[in-house]
Image (cartoon, rainbow, N blue to C red; front, side, top):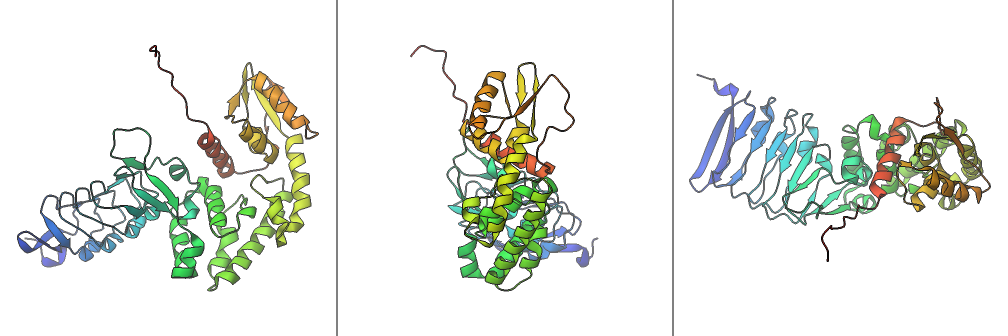
Length: 382
């Protein structure tokens, strides 16, 4: 017989009154579905370090405190569907190192913050749910594409209303340190491949979007500012650090694509503007566009500031054909520049910008995101 020390007690109330479910500390699943549960205490669940699945589906819960799950880092499934939940705080789930899916469908939830579960593979929801994320996640691929939101609907197009929290408003209401904690917790789950996307989202969210183009570890810019108690002082520190690091980045032939020089002219970053203008000219001059037969690869152009602007306006993808390239050349020629085409020749380094894989990944994601949806024409006669 197991000792009481090895058992976890989970008190709950339902149609049959107050009851207690006892499960082993080593259990991998808590199975409490279809129990008519109206309230439950999950605090002791924090002892269950092997827990992978919590099933509270098909009950009568109107609220549930998941804080007891913060210590369950192996958790991969949370089933809350078919309850009466009005809202639920998912922040305890950010600590999971093995996330798979959460089902919150068929509840009474109209609005939910999915920031803490952005790294989960899927969140199953009802159509039309209003979901929010922190700005630091705005450009993360699974948020940009909404691929993590799996709506329980027959329609293929996502119907969720996706919005982003206002850092400025949250700082006014909850304080700067509250936002710092959220930024730090999210960053712990960010892969290095998404550093640039994270950096861009954070800087825009904090009102510094004009210099959101640092191609490196975002904490190089943020770390000192995040340790300061006052947001005004923190903002000054972060901005100054960003200006200094981007200055070095430009000197090292790094990217300038998302630097807004018109807005920068009104800030301390104005000293960078002449360097940015010169650098953008050099980006094109040092870029080689590879062409193999009738296929032209545009990524070397996309990662340049001028190329990004022109190709975006033309609504192009990552590949094109020689005829379209001639149109691109005409647009670039109007700026007094020319592009080099390498036809059927292996090119060791076609890039005119010294950039990270994270930056190139972000550009590719933005290109894919901004592509017009395909239009299907029925073969039937109208």
